[in-house]
Length: 187
Image 1 (cartoon, one colour):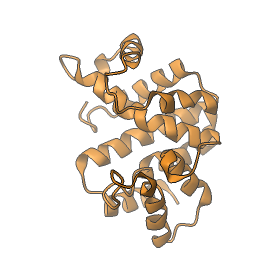
Image 2 (cartoon, helix red, strand yellow):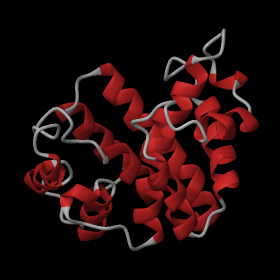
Image 3 (cartoon, rainbow, N blue to C red):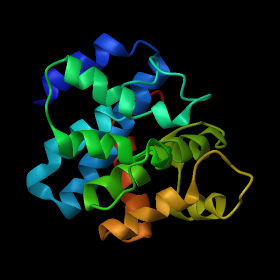
């Protein structure tokens, strides 16, 4: 599947602007991580990021967290996609699905998902609310404040190190990638 097909599927099943922005943000973070860890797979890693929450509006994930991921897999199969690596990566971003991250791709999506929201939350506390204003040291400071953006799982973000990437480098990659699409994602 190429990116155009992935985007077509995404827009068929996802309508909420915030969800679409989040999916796009995770896509670009995954692309940045792939440039470091698997440059020949950048597009594929980006597609994983783009589609990781495909089922967000189609399953009762708050009441049944185990359905988030497997429902995306079912949607993709219905669309004629047969890609077990993609399926496992999508499920691995939500350990409640029963799939535990075990590959660099899976650790990267596990980490990139909460990092996108965390960095958005950090940007929101700046007077201009712009990702361009966010500094690395501010991210670290907020990361160590457990009550700040409490829903962003710190252990998942730190799992990037299991993929082979230093956490500080991950922060810088994510910031850079989000700055590149700041207008697109309202930051």
